[in-house]
Each structure stands twice: as structure tokens, then as C-alpha cells.
Length: 417
View 1 (cartoon, rainbow, N blue to C red):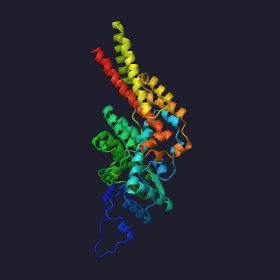
View 2: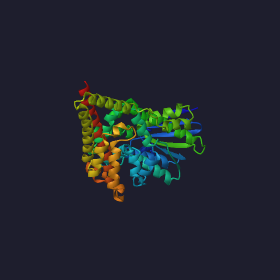
View 3: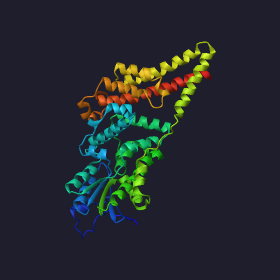
């Protein structure tokens, strides 16, 4: 049986002298949930607040807890506590597997957070880092309870239709290319929301599927992780440090979820498979073959005109995207050759081909990996750093090819009509 209550700390009576710890915890949002013999104290934090950092340290210093849980996955924990995983990237494997877009999205989110840190003088997630270091200093167990950010991004992406994906990609692209200050309303939302949700801007609040993947699913995932760990019997008093945007949902999930936690977590960790039938590719091939067959059957040269238009339009725009990305001449040539062909193959993209050639010709140095996070804060850095430029190459070449497909396809359709 689970019970839940709010424990918001308020101003003490005038005749009571508050301890420094009590003063630190004034007005901090706290909920407690007791379940299966474990009491979970959930602290809702603002990811850009020194008050949240102080509250975390005060609660851990109170020695009330034997365990600290934080809203982090393993990779984010390593990055936040100083172990830079970027130097371990296998760039060729990333390009071959089509994950360059995912890595670029992670870098864009990191750049957004770094701009916040420079603007506000406090690193986003500082309270999570403080929880990790304070738990280590106090020799307490540390649980990492959040879902891997890569899984979250893939599930969010798969939940969207093609138009929503285009809007999301353009928004992330804008965050890559423009290093302006973060607006005041975004900062205010961060004080009571979720860092990942805020990183996607207004689009996350207007898209129920995206909100579900970024917030709701993670509430249930973190609740399942807490129940999994709690079932091992080692913990009795757990402090869980999560963003304020997760506090209510996590408390409810921890109190009411009845499914077996390991099975629930495995389900939320999976990425739903798309249809194995590449309907768009099949439709595109049928459309092109039909259009070319019609054109050649006329015998007046229209078939050659349509085929040449397809090759030149897709090839030129794909190559133009590679040029804008600062691609090597051979990468540009690869983009031109690949762009008319890769739309007809569901597992390939022109960006994979062009970025692969770019990574082979201009092999990143150790310095590129070492300074990747710093370089991606500014637009110039994305083009200066060889690792980041491969990601830009992948994105812009694919974008150029996609535009070419629609323009050339519209031209063919116009001829048929």
C-alpha cells in the first residue's frame, strides 16, 4: 500500500528560531511517498537555481537518508561529473548507423545548456551534480533513475508525424545555428519545469506525443526504477532529486502504478518498431518509374527530360547542402551522385554517404573530440570542429536532397497532369 503527502517547508513561527537547514528548505517543493516499506522523499528542483543546490546539500547533510536517487541516466551522469564520453565516439559507426542526427541533437541540447550557464552564471543541472557529489562524500548509495536520453529522443521522434518531425528538426537546427541569449520566458519556465522539455521550446508544449515521451513516460520510468531498487531491500529512506516538472507526476506514478516494475521499465526502454514495409520508398519508386515510363512512351524526349530533371535537381540540391556544410570537394561529389539514388533505398541517405566521405577525408583529431562541447556553443564552432562539421554535413545534405525530391517530384507530377 502506498501513501503520499506534500511536505512544503514554510516560514517558522516568529517565536521559533529556524536552523540554517530549515531556512535553506523554505518553500522548497517536497513530497513523500511510502511504498513497500521504503519512504521516498521527492525534492522538486529548478535546474538553474542556487536555492535548489543548497536544498539538496542540506537534505543530504541532515543524515536522514541512506540513498540518493537523481534524475540522470548513466551517460548524463558521466558528462555532468566530468567524465567526457565524447572522446570515445566512433564517428564512422555513428554515420553508418544513421545516428548522426541523434548525436547532433544531443550536442544542440548541450549547447543550449551551456548558453544558459554562461548567461545565468550557474550550470543547468548543478543541483543534480551536487546530489551526486554530496552522496559520494556522505558514502550513500546513488541511484541513476532516468531513462537514457537517446531512448527518449528516439521515442519522441517516432511518435511524431512527418510534418511535426520537420518542425522539430528545423527547431533543433535553429538552436544549432543561432547562439543568441535564452529568452526570459524560457528561463522562467525552467524554474518550474523540465530541462529537456524546455530545450525543445514551445513545440514540446503544443505536441501531446512529444510531451508524453519527454515528461509523462519518464515519470513512470523513474517510478519503476525506484520501485526496482527499493525491492532489493537495502534502502529504507530515499531522497529523490528530480526537476519540479516531474514532482507531481512521479509522486502519482510511484503511489499508484501497479505493474511489475522491471517489465514496465523494459517496455518504456523499448523503441517501437516502424512498419517493416517502406511504403514511402515503394510509392516513390512506383511514381518515378511510372512517370519515366510514360515519358519515354511518348517518344518526344520527355522521358529523358524527366529523368535528367530528377538527377540534376536532387543531385544539385544535395551537393549544395554539402557545400553549405563546408564539405570537401569529394564529399560534394559523393552527395551529388548519391542524392538521386538514396531516396530509392529505405536504409540509406545521401547524408550518410557524404558525411562518411567527409569523415574519411578529414579525419577528426583528438583536439576536435576534446573541445567538441565547447565548439558547438557557437555557429562558427560547428564548422570549425571536424566532428561537428560531419554532423552538419549529414543534416544539410539530407535536407538538400529532401527538398530536391519534392521539387523534382512536383515537376514530374506537373508534366503528368
